[in-house]
Length: 267
Image (cartoon, rainbow, N blue to C red; front, side, top):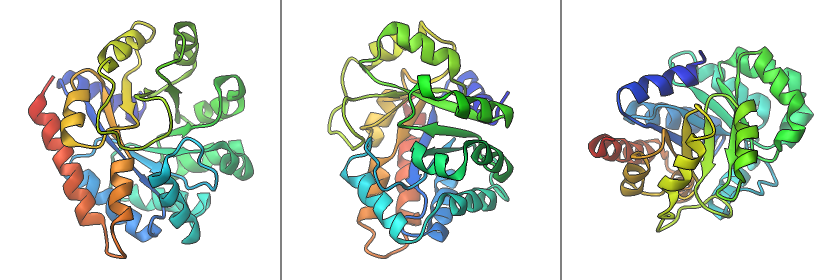
């Protein structure tokens, strides 16, 4: 069982959903990202999504687009992100998922990326713009190196396609809570519990919910019916507002608030 699966199974047995914060690697620089990830884990993060910055992040809203642009201007590359993962793995056991787009993976080399990501200590890969019909090479490479390949589902994904995607995914399924790009939402769709429940009928894999979660209250609500709560743009907004200050403390405090709300809500 992978580190991701073990973590989610352990939390599920405890009656808890996992808190999964996302941060763009290299925003404002990779040293800061290292401090941010350690602060998030200390504050209660159960898994971490580490964004690989890309120049055309078509699934991301303005906040994460700006975050990726800052990271690229700071010289962040996929090899340097893997170096960061290796550095984090020196003192963290928390699962790390690389979240990004196919172009950087293709340029790096699919087999090489899976090999080097596993060697660095990553646990999974989520490739936003690679449909399952085209993911055979990446799926084979990640399986060969014991990495989970996380799959995305949309609210509009038909049931038959959910079952197909679920058969080929591992780790967990990432259910996108809203139509459109990433970004905090004042309100989440009230039908989310029913949508997640429908996915559960198609797969035994854990189901995480992301896109739109911005507050402790929303995280607590989602944790009542999902196996993981993924928060990205709200953290990106804190990076937006850092004005050159080290944002690790503010982000750690924010993640701590999310974790506390989820624990208080129970399941």
